[in-house]
Image (cartoon, rainbow, N blue to C red; front, side, top):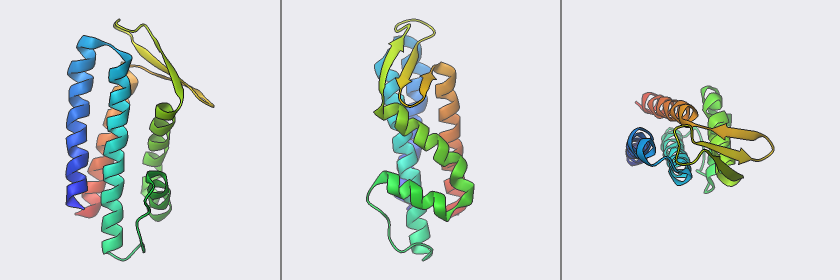
Length: 145
């Protein structure tokens, strides 16, 4: 439980560096994709940590193997988590859909995800996703302690 929370914090450190240093100097689409992957990894570690806690307290019987099933179980178990479910699903959709880059190597680089709904991810959106993920990990830490 604590190890998963530690893993989530470590992923957030990496995301922080990727956003504020790496992306600032490289401005490539690969960096944006890597940031989204790491945000998803942080969510996965936080969800796993929370589910381990709930299993320890005997509120759930078992932890599913699939990350999507884990998230769905958590959304059903904890109503306060629904806000974070929305962002987790959004990040997963952005990651799995086809995408293209606009203004790569320039200041206003934007990833355009082409799924059911067209989503544009720019520097400001990445910071918003990072802040929400950080807020989620803080929520998990407070819930567990």
